[in-house]
Figure 1 (cartoon, one colour):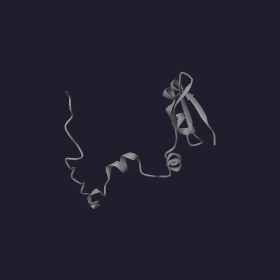
Figure 2 (cartoon, one colour):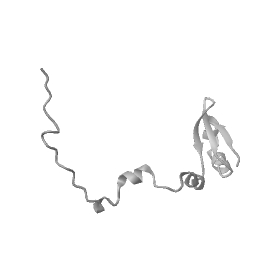
Figure 3 (tube, one colour):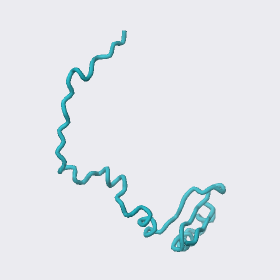
Length: 85
């Protein structure tokens, strides 16, 4: 695996090169000399994440209609008005 580092300027000037070398390994893109972004192929990204659903997909809850949920009612013992005196 080859790791390539490009400055933001180099990336902006030659994005096609960055995409091309990302097939060899990750491409680190720096801002002011510090790593700020990483460019990966989609295959590498899926391998790293284990092809698991994203948090957005999990929060969408597509099977929510299949869940029976009846929350209990709160009793008056559970809460009381605040004393602001």
